[in-house]
Amino acid sequence: MTGKTHLGIGVMFTIILSEYFNMTLTTGALLACALASILPDIDHPKSFINQYILPFKNKITKTTFYFTLGIVIYFINSFYFNFTYFNLISFFSVLIGLSNHRNGLTHSIFGFLCFVSLFGYAAVVYKFQEYIIPFSIGYIMHLIADMFTNGGVPIMYPFKKKRFKMPFTFKVGSWIGNLIESAVILTFLIYAAWRLPIILTKYR
Image (cartoon, rainbow, N blue to C red):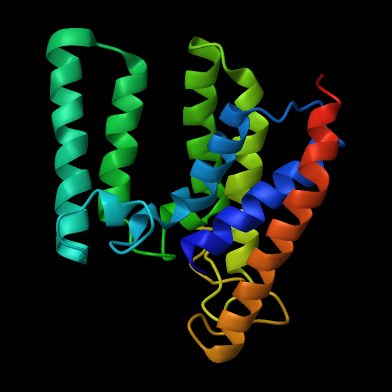
């Protein structure tokens, strides 16, 4: 799916679930959800995030960039800071560099737990715990949404490499796929325009 579709799905479900969980819809919460909604695709060189980071959108550049970034962060942290959080970022950066799109870490329950734990650790340290739930919703909805595509996701990686998918799937980039994704985005816009003003009035 496109980054825009994942953004729409993640934010829409965060808005929906905010009415059932003890969750306040702030700009920060929606941004955390938006980030998590596109984060699993960071292992793809042409993903929404990497379009703005990588100078060349190919696998070699992606692998080199994230692997090098992880090593640099590790050594800088070792010599100057010695923060556990930086070591975790370094570790995951290397894993992202070595991971293939939808064939490894980021599109699995294991990856979900790793990134939510990393984000949660930062949230506790820097006092923005209220963003953990929106972040989690955005990430898990990305995985669920990709299970509706023909490629499926290796949800049990690294324990199983089998790709799991829903009974009904579509091919990304096909006319039916584009139609479905356009319908999802339109549904999100209509729902957000309807519910957001109502929800936000509760905070006044």
